[in-house]
Length: 338
Image (tube, rainbow, N blue to C red; front, side, top):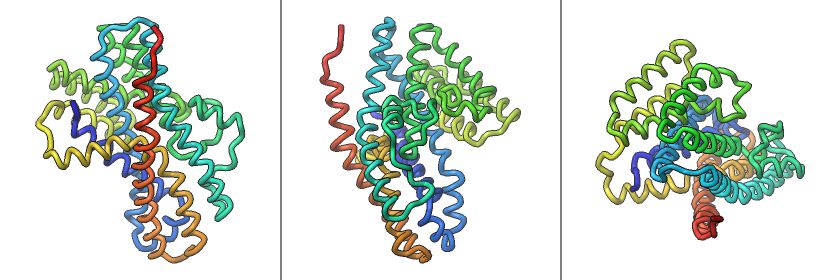
């Protein structure tokens, strides 16, 4: 069953991430800031909060998928983790190839501090195994850190389901609270899934609250704990995560949107991962071009920002159709070990 609200949240969050990177990394945004300083500053400072939406939605969808599979052996749980790795890593490998090519063009055209340097073999291997931040390598593209975190969070949730079976909800709630009150307050942990499990766990709990018809009680208890944590140490990212989780819990199973709107949202939601992977390399090249041709023209650079946004959407759609979808279909047909 499609969930239109999930598609809507993923579509909007993906657009905000693109706009955040366009506003945060110059030189186009630096020149265009003269015409729209508040707008560009808003996207640069607050646009990254959209990541919290992805975290909550990720936890919600993972809980939904794992709950439908019933109990699992250790071997079955490991297979789920490997399938998740391949689901993320195959498109990531193609996106890294694009990122390397675009970074080389951008360095030759107009070197910028935000342009990744030429990759070493160990750095590339670390990215392919989602270990780049844990091993201290420079990122080859903006956003690849999230792919590694998503994998860590999913593997952690599968482990909690396997360890506790029907008691998984208590373990998830406890680990989410530990993240909320401790790990998420320590920037040194931001390369580890535990830092983000507060938001991810809210998504898991929101699904359980809605699916088991105990929506009001679980959501109220979760909101109370989160508000207490925010009174102790306010974090806007946690407030956004809470709002997203409550919204999902309260609207799960509600009537759907008109069919035409659902088709558009489904497309934008489905391609959100592809857009997430490929938009930054595209923006690098457009930034280099406009920074070289019109370095101080605000109007031209506003056009450049809009062009980069549009080309990112086009690249995301093409990548989804020709890379991500074939990879998913191949994984679905691939033989599985007994």
